[in-house]
Amino acid sequence: GKLGVLFPGQGAQFAGMGEGLYRAYPVFAAVYDEVVAAFGFDIDAARLDETRFTQAALFAVEVATFRLLQSW
Image (cartoon, rainbow, N blue to C red; front, side, top):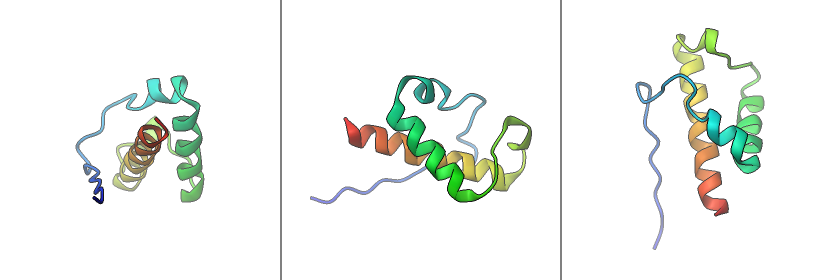
């Protein structure tokens, strides 16, 4: 069958989300960096209170997590 994947929206985030995965798994880190680079702006903790950065960071973590699971 086909697989559907749903990503949660804003409100699911927390400080340091994905940090351990980023350090431990090169696949996660590479995909995260690729997604963030495509946005054309940096994502840092100081900007995460702004919706556009929160949504972008969440999306990057979610895509990187999916790709990590896919690699396994």
